[in-house]
Length: 116
Image (cartoon, rainbow, N blue to C red; front, side, top):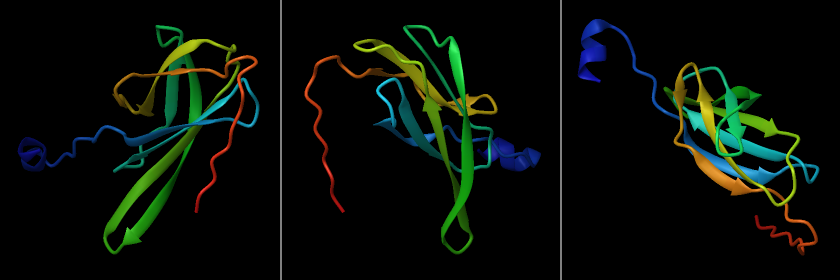
């Protein structure tokens, strides 16, 4: 970071706080994450290799004076049941590590947990 300060440029931080949730239909998943800058938003995903992309949306979030970060969301669509997928989130060349999930299992019981 010292080098970027000396050169007058800022290095982008990788995405953090990556969250995954079931989508509105069994073939979708919703992904959310945060960044320190207003970078482009996308999720790259696929079975083993990241061959598909889904565009994301971002919005500024300010809680404390002089501190703004950006929340991002994207929807993965067209998932097959009982399938393991890999994904990563980010944009502008800066991405999270690759994570994995299993899509909705056929004939599996479905439970909701609600808190708040």
